[in-house]
Structures are given as C-alpha cells and as structure tokens.
Length: 604
Image 1 (tube, rainbow, N blue to C red):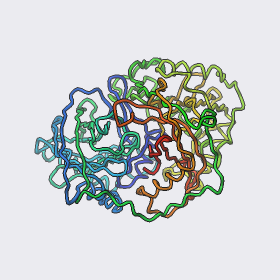
Image 2: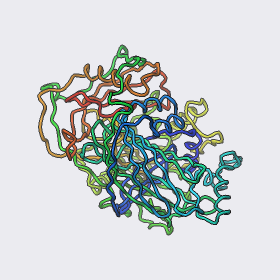
Image 3: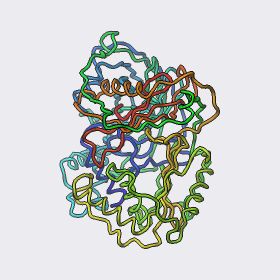
Image 4: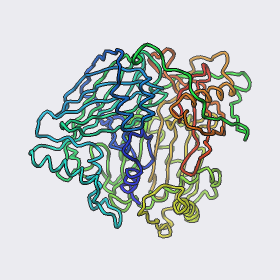
C-alpha cells in the first residue's frame, strides 16, 4: 500500500462531514524553506498551507448580537444537529470582510466561538462569470478517478464522480477556468496576545447553485483557542487552477494572508450558555491508575515556570542533510521531492522526511517497515517490544543515534532537552512478528483499511533494510506527548535516515518564577469530570477509565494573554474509554496545575 492508497482509504472512511482531524503520520503537510508553516485541514488531508506573507490586510469585524447564525445552521446541516444546537449557544461575530485573490473574491461571513473552538463560514465568488469554482470533494474525486490512483479491480464510476464531472462539463461550455479555493485560519490570537497555530483545523466546502462556494472551518485547540474578549485570526487563502482532468496546476497557485479582528458576543441575548447539563460520562479510578510526579514536586509541592521559545524548522534547514540525490525537476511547490522520490516537508514546528525507494508512488521497504512499527503503541501490545539487538545489517544502534542527534542539533533543538526514550531493533525477525499482528488486526476487522487491501510481502524485504527505530522525547517527567507537539521519531538503516517525523513547537528557556503551590491530582481529576461532561461529547453515555495522572509541562500564553509563551506545570490526565480498541489510543486532558484551567483535551 502506498501513500496515495493510504490517502484514498482516509477519503473513503470520512463521510460528507467536517471532522477536524489531527495530523496523521502518513498524510503529512508539505512545505519547505520560504514556504513557511503547516496545517492539516478538511476531512481529508490537503496540501500544507503555510507560506511567506506577502501582504497583510488588517480588518476589523464588528460583533453584535444576532437572532440566527449561519455558522450554527451550516454545521447543524452538514455535521450534525447537536453541534448546530451547541453553536447557537456560543458567541457570534458577523464579519462580512472580503479580499480579492486572483480571479475570486473571498468573504469571511461569520465567526462563532464555543468551548475553545472557533467556527467560521464564508463565501467564495468568481470575478469572471465564465469561471467555475470546484469544491474540494469534487477535486479529490476527479484526481482519485485517474487510472494510476485506482486500486485493483476498482470501478471509478460513481454518483460522486458524475457530480464532479458536471463541473468539468460546465467549464467547457462556458470556456472559463476551473478554480479551487481554500480559506482557513492559520494563526489565532486572544486579546491581542501571541498568535498561535491551532493543532486541529477542519475544512469543508460546498457548491451553490449561483456558482459560488460556501466554505466552513473549525479551529479547535486549547493552546491557541481559549476564552477571551477579542480574537485575532490570520486567514490563509489559496486559489489554484485545475486542468480538464481535475489536476491542480501548481504553477497557478496564488496565496494571500489577511487578518481579521472580532469581538464575539452571545447570541440572542447577553446570557452565557447554561452550565446545567446531564452528566452522562462516568469517570472511574477503581482499576487503579499511575500517579507520576517529579521529585521536586514531591519535596516542595510546586514546580517552576519557564520561558517557552518558539522554534522554526524551516529557518536553516538544508535538504542535503537528509538526501544527497538532488531535488527532482518539477517537484511540488509545497514540498521537496528528491531524485530518488523521497519527500521532505517542513513547517516552523514540524518536519517530515519519508523515503520512497521504488518509485514516486511506492512507499518502498522503509515505508512498509515504519507503518507496522506503530503496533507497539496498540493497547494490547504496549510494552511488548523491547530492544534486543544493538547491531543489525550495516548499522549499529550507536551510529543510528549519532545520525539522529546530528540532525536534531542542526535543526536548532537543544539535545539536552531531549532523551532517546525508546529504541527498537527492526530486524527481519521483528518485522515479521509485527507484520503478523498488523495483518491479524485487519483480518479481524479491528484496523480500518480499504476493501481491496492486499497484504504486503514482508518476506521480500532484504536484510540490508534492517534498521533502528528511535523516539526522542522531552526530558520531562514521563515525557508524555499528549498534545502531539513534541517528539522526534527516526528510522535509520545502512543508507542513513530514511524516515524522520519531528515535532517541537517550543524550546524551554529561562526559569521565570515558581508558584507557592499547585493543585493536587485529585483536584485535576475532579476538573476532568466537569470538563468532559461540559464538552460536546458529554451527552453520550460512556464510561471513562483513568490510566495515569502525570505532572509534566505544557506551553500556555503568558499570564493575562500577553505576548509570549511559558511552560507551566501541568496535570496530564491520561484516560481510555470503555469501547477502546486497537484504533483508539490513550487519550488526554491537560490542566494548568497552577490555576486548574483546562489547557487542551482529546474531547475538546
């Protein structure tokens, strides 16, 4: 299975609704060097939309109470009625500001804030009447109908394809261009504080009968989107022309960044959403849970606060650090493709390198090996795989670590703040053992894959592809990666680094103070129960089992939403629901251990 097949599986698995997915290891953001930043968006993963800013248009949106909400109506219709009803209880701002990008006018119509999430609806209109706007679902359908993307014995015809081809037919009849547009928030500030990139952005658009397109987005992230009076939203908009077969024409890409400031108010009247709700989530601790705290806290009952310094992987990166075969001619504008078909993409806080040894669309041996490594994290197999060998064909563990740590240092990460917490020898025997678990999960229906999935022949992998998988984590207590913002993962074999997925949003700076005391883990668990029942998932009857309570560090905006970020002591409540399966990993809720406020959570 190659990258494009993986993308297709995800596309099929997601129905016509906004999901707000977080990053997936295979569906990576693609951008490098001057094209700065990243964000995964929509129900499927689209190209990364991070860029060097060429112009910023500051717009002020006046907030005032309304009797209805376009956002609530749209999400209620295209996501679900319950979400629409919840958004009616949020705070609303009518924006109505527009920018012209290439041959389209993009308007942000309305914003709603609710429960650490920003939801928006806008409209795109073509300047020239003959041009045709194509929604993203139709673009993906056209691309995936091409013969090279079809899985064996797959019939490309479908109602979705017929609908997509209607846009092609219309453009032919009018003689106009086919255009696809994306517009979403890339960074968000609260009360004029530091603007941060949300960890999760969902995007969905639909075509209207008058030729316009209505787009929507959800940005939900307790780090970037939290309670405040005013919100500053950096919108990133892109316009790209399609050819007659629906392929994106990279050289037609136009980008624009613009900032909207708004002050949402509660809808209908000035009351806040009612806190009265049924408590349907039961939080259990009877099974026992780990309590993990550092010695400093055990001795004093408190921990220091540190400065948080934003990182930028794109600033000094050199492609030859990862691959010396040279950059392929005609490579995409949003990522670097090498002559051996490896792909490198980067953003300020994340970098991805994946080797494709066989062809442009084949994941090669290394990709197949990396894919099955993740079984080590499945609940039924956690802790099962330990390091057994320190020397494999053509590579030693010491050499693998040296290569990884050289890259870490070159990228400006303080090696003293990271430790190699996990190393695994991927020998041929280990590869076969993990593959057996992986395939069994698919056969048993516990792991989602495509109907036409064909097992990979791991017996054909030569011994020269053996290597070491390495995980570097922050040198903090338990080094959890609850928010997905930290962690350096490598696969190194005799050819060098063939896989690197790196995330490091902030480096820890100087110590700036120490609170007198912190809330206890019992208080954090109590806050967890309150918050999960208050969330959109609180209406579902379910039982939650707490597995661990960990005192660690997470970044938050400086006190009072001022400029700058700090690392604060944080209670990480790690939990699992009753219906957990192989596809459900340990979930989290992060609480500021100084004031007890929710920082971020899986249920946000």
